[in-house]
Length: 164
Length: 450
Image (tube, rainbow over all chains, first blue to last red; front, side, top):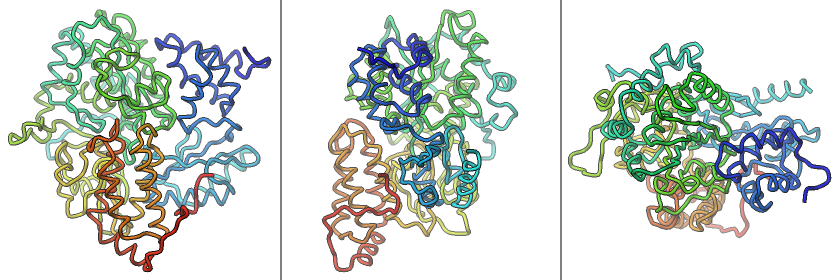
């Protein structure tokens, strides 16, 4: 049964249904559908999982099982308007990636996975971002920031602060 | 490599290199037109088989041979999956191909789909590559508009749809059956083989999974021929009947402590030292190298004394590494602590173990626990033997796991401790002279996730 006020908008539902012809099963649409919801809401609450399951002809547990396998989708609260992934894998670590991450934790007063009180920035560590020639690096939404140092990371945070 | 002419990276610096116009003005899609007009799919499989092309994603399995495992006369559908979930630490060559020259990847995908009689190709793209997503989608749209995709491609009876499928930040999705499970909308737990994907893969249908760089090589072999491809690399060792040789160009990613990190194209078999000195511009800050990861972190370590190792499909194995892997070379200079290196490696694999097989889930977690403790000054000398015991007992080589992730977790442990044991012992003796033990977990880092 659908909840009285759906989480998924008509637009999201249409976008998800447009993916159906790409796959021979509805279950294969799970991950793309989760991305559709997450792109809009910045999280996938349990209510959305129930609605997605209904849309895909699955049990909510099927969708939740897949969702929870990936550490990517938040469920309790939306991530920030900016989601910053700081690489901590070997090529970045060799060039100071851990120090950049630690510095940003202090600067933003966050631990990885947390969001600033104003909902602007979520800080995350990530495993190899595949941009090792620019180590240490950080992916913020769609933008890759290269050859970082604590100072350039600070400057970046300052531009975010001024943009809000 | 005096006569070597790069092909995979030949066009990445031309203006608008990611567009169809730029690709075609450099001769792109000629090979596709010729193959569709002149060769049937079986003949094209034979061509790739005779080229000796081996998969570029890590395992180095002969590509043409993989294609022949598909059942003959199958009514379809047959699926092609392109593995663009490049996540091995140190590796970024697929990203460069997809960002800067996506049509090269698509021509290879279309040709490989033609060879395997696939009607649908899914490109499984890792989440962290948003520019690849945009460039690849734009390139796919251009291909549909040009008649290179869709119904009856270029007037032939071959039809193909290509879809991009975006991952969600999980290393295990690069394992081919993990990729298939993830595509089906499930958790990416690798499958027990057999059945192999060629027999029963995606949606229970025959399936081939090929890497991005592999299909790019397919396009170049179609354009330039087998003799060109076999003119490069290390020929098969006649004394080793199991060595099919290492032919063709390869993209080497060089990162870490070098002056010029980057992706370099060279014939298979360039030595680690040549890569560091001639491509990477030498070790940074005038320092000496201490070690190198030969092909992504899961391949283990070469010591500086082993830098003459040829980076072909057999070279790293002769030096005790797991293999060539993704040919991503990460240089560690003389100041790097092997304890820090191994801690970083163990943390990665603990984070990325999918949790399906107990030896991997528990082995990677306990290895990280021990490294945390050693790093924090509570290590004991017999921890090193315990770590080696874990390393020797997890993975498909000892036969305790379904997929090779645990072998990749084990190799850095085994290489680091066996090749640098003195450093580990000195560190433990220095930081914990009393041999103190602690029963509580020790966070080794100032920064931990909540």
